[in-house]
Length: 116
Image (spheres, rainbow, N blue to C red):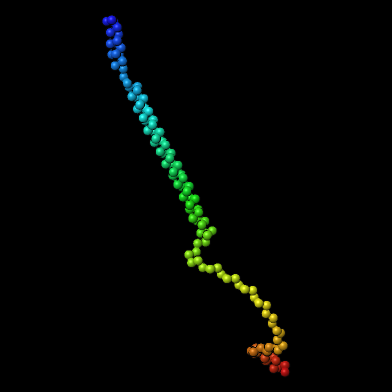
């Protein structure tokens, strides 16, 4: 019995003297891995948001540039110009009287006088 107690006490002492360093180290490693994983995920999410924001800004800018061309924003809202009516067909009467020039060219007039 005495040997049994001595073996039992020896086993208790050995189990009490063992370190939990491996378990503590594993916990620290697991917590650091979890921390780095969370940091990586947050960085990737931020990159994704930045990329999406840039793409959305470019799309919105291009729509803003195209919109006035398509919609023709006019703040006055003027009515459209009326359509011009067709020109009526006038029938001109032929004039039977010859029209004489009002002014006579002096050089032409001297020739006419000489001829007469």
